Image (tube, rainbow, N blue to C red; front, side, top):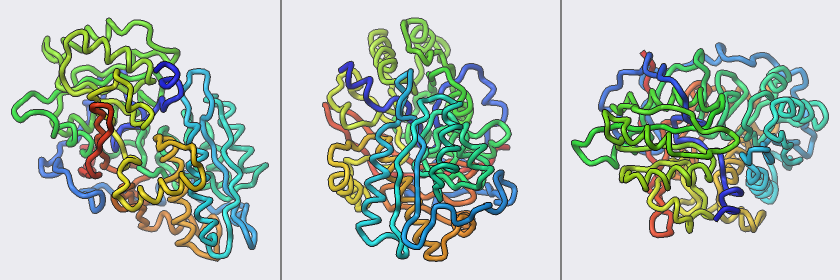
Length: 447
């Protein structure tokens, strides 16, 4: 399985509460929201309660008119290009995102394009997980490629934001880093997940409520969070803690002890986790790490006698036979490809088969596809009189993105500052994945 682990999805995100989790320290408890128990109930994948959380679009960064509002637009085409971490020294990459987006754009073109124009998709530029290269590739997209918008954007760093902001370049992606938070031009398919301390205005209760449903009634609600040691994790973990604390969980371990270079010995971590809840193990352990590191942790936890709930972000059909991941739950933000009874998922899988036949329904592939879908849908809404300013006015004017049963509802401009409180828990058992329908909690203001 070693080769599979290296090639599989390595950095993923927790549904509705985090881009990349795991942080040392415990300051996340300082401003936890007091949530009405009624808001902890799970509901449909749309129509979720945002309580009193609102945002004024005029308060967001990256305002202003585009200097070249028809950049990349001709009478017959719209130029789109993406930015992704395709390669990385650490192995953390989103390579499948390009093919996923390409499949969606290809179907749009096969159906006649958008208001008389086809999508001229130039592919993704690889930042190599290097902040300087990330910035340079963003500049190349805008200045050299002259794209109208950037999609998909799936990177491990957000150095691109200065360029996109200066040139008013709308961008669409998964939102695994803070570039998708607090500005008027970034649109994540699941909302802002890793806000900075200054940007945090809310918590959401969806995924914690899903985990809560797995815990036997009357049992203590405690959780340990183990993460990789990077800046996005430190930002995202604060949001994770707030969400679980708002749902009544006691976060008993909250650290990022996993080096980006890889975990050598899981023993100290496991020893700490096994006694974290007043000398006992917590009810659940959530880990966001590269797959190989998670395998070490899972094996060591089980060897130490842990029999609680094990949560990872590792949904990938290629991992179904990985015995090390047996009986774990993958926390997801949209419905996986196995749910072909859902029309939107059925269409996505048909597009993969038609335009990228070797592409698995990995999370990066699906994120790339749905980012492209979000852009296509918005372009259709704007119509023939297409400019950057018209697109942003549409998206930031009480716009909703939603694919029934497949991608949960996001609301704009609200989700520039908050994540969608939705998702599902995919369960790997007996070599097969299963996943219930998407459900949503609520968004509540930090008090």
